[in-house]
Image (cartoon, rainbow, N blue to C red; front, side, top):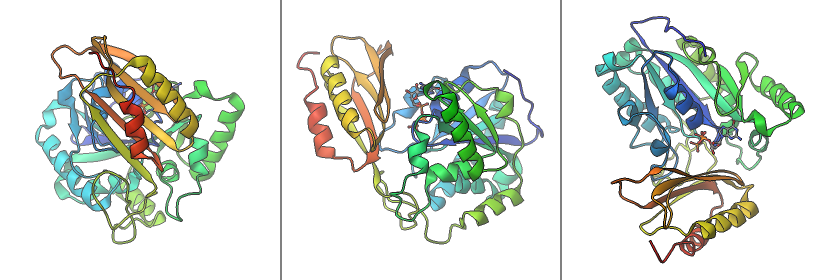
Length: 351
Ligand SMILES: Nc1nc2c(ncn2[C@@H]2O[C@H](COP(=O)(O)OP(=O)(O)OP(=O)(O)O)[C@@H](O)[C@H]2O)c(=O)[nH]1
């Protein structure tokens, strides 16, 4: 690990961390937050899905995590206002931290997020956009880059690569050297200037992604022009996070379904349901996450699945925390009724 120094100590450097669903943003964030790099980092999180699972997956102490409660970070109008508000709160507590990381939802285009740092004079004076860092899932990105079912609208997996100052190809353990070389070549075709790094579980030289001063306002304006992102027309999305936008640009066929159950799951039943369901629908079931209550077990379990790859494991003890099950499914053409029935059949009669 290499320690970095912010370039201008008067301004708070801000890193925008982006990457398609399941690329490893939270994993990288946890790595950053647990490394002893001598800097205090505030995190602004935003997620796709109505219930919050992500903040439970971030290991750091809660006071460092600020959630964007309303508004999806991929929407121009909402995000600009919300982000500006959150940033102002952070600026007021400026002495508590020296770097801000904004983790975007996996379906966000980072450019409007970046431009929101140039629309408010107070935020602009107090912060300095450091870089857009884009994570890429070495195993799964291919299918999203070639995703044709985007209705002629911008593909956010591509936007995220185009807008990046640094691209981290993560999950290199899941791809061959030849596949990685091809992917690097393909990424170069989309972005000629960004530094490309490789990682496993987000372990990168932090000096290569933080404190790199990759931004100038003119650069953002250029990018915005390039992507036709002036915020006035025609962009936005319509995914299932409970509110409608007219400025939809994202793939409206991608939705999220969230479930909570106040009964525990029978672990073997749940495992076999998930294996079967995600095995059959792995192409279109992009991402599944959950904080799980398992019958007969005092520890909460964490479910992480990216397409058909499932990771379900125990975490720490529930303690006094209220036990419940929270799951989010994100994908294309999700059938809520089928999921609800399938999950319901996995609930345990005994606690
Ligand atoms: N094999 C492998 N798995 C990884 C690696 N990095 C992360 N993962 C796993 O991939 C899954 C998704 O990682 P996250 O960090 O939650 O991804 P994310 O980008 O925050 O996901 P969203 O918030 O849903 O967009 C988790 O199960 C991680 O443990 C890696 O380098 N190799």
